[in-house]
Image (cartoon, rainbow, N blue to C red; front, top):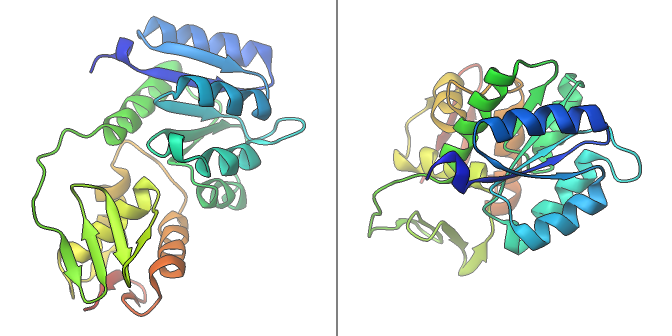
Length: 228
């Protein structure tokens, strides 16, 4: 796919930001939709199903975190990448963003070329060209099917956001191996993406809540491993 095949929804209550970022994205060839508040963004996303949504955090009425929560609850937008573009760089704000289901958290100010580079990396991860495997990973009552991007536990399907699925698949790819935090960050988020130190912890906690906390072990000061 080329840039012209991608649609990006830009959401910010500041008109100048909308115009500036929209101009630079269009210059790169992207199709751009805009919204000035969370409620309008949700309606536009329903109608257009963009490939990526770029959200501000601080917006009147429905803020970016709440908007992201709603977007992530909509099955028709399951494969859509969501990133925050905001002046708020505090750790707790980043953690809230990732807990809401964001794929990236980008702080302003940022140069247009750096922003488009980050977005390209996100879009590549959101639309990977990978060879399919006919073999699902089975660990007792836990089944991970990379072909269908599905997880089952005790016969019940579990919906996982993209990053949680990729993290679980990585840990399960070599049961018993301790994956250092640096390796996890590199393989799941990539070197093009800068995220807060607690990002992995947030995703591990959410995985444990969904599949149970007995299989994913914490190795203090090192990382995590999956035990059969």
